[in-house]
Length: 330
Figure (cartoon, rainbow, N blue to C red):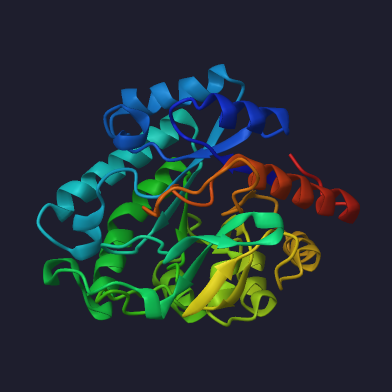
């Protein structure tokens, strides 16, 4: 398995140094302009500059994660959709040219992943995030809302347009589930809320580029049996990326945990992934903010759950499981 970390596209001395010190070499990043200080990464020069920043620090960019530019016209099917899809195809060509093999993308329209609180006390006073449906705000403006049927149409239209380029460039598209996995959320339809939804996506086009991010805790929030649903996807090579974290609760009411004290048997799950042939990239997902760290206000993206101390703990814990289980780690 390939251990990776999500690091900012502009050098952060603390995060970059700590990642290197714990042995991470493969990086996932978000190359959007507001985080990189550069033009959008469908500009080859901009993406090349980001890759160069990491290379200088001894890292390789394995993949990109999240919306790399404004993809709302694609998701909502509004004006400028085809132009945005052209930008995405150019992004894939740039990735292929630079050896970036993976894009973890989502199809959450108008709202990304969502939490209602970010300062819930956990073990020893660490802070974790939670979601409570009863605390969700008002519906968004009508122009930002969309039905599930329309969202499905837009997702399949997008896949038909971009998968041929991804195939040509040898890039794996890894679709992330909706977090939280419920619909609607603030008036916005959401469709990637069950294992059956992913089966529909995979059946739409049989392509080596058409796969998923197995975000373990999000599928748990759906109430799915993690072993049962992942087994056929693993065997068919459709799990392109693993996100490892844990939660207590279910889709309408849950809070995050440390990687070692949630209800999921992490040892059993890592052994399961390995036994069914997964040898690709994984990363610890959201982790608690620990001593000396404070989670900022929630703004989706990497605003919460991405302080480094909890990530270091998670990396060590997961590596230890792998070593004790005879699972090779790169």
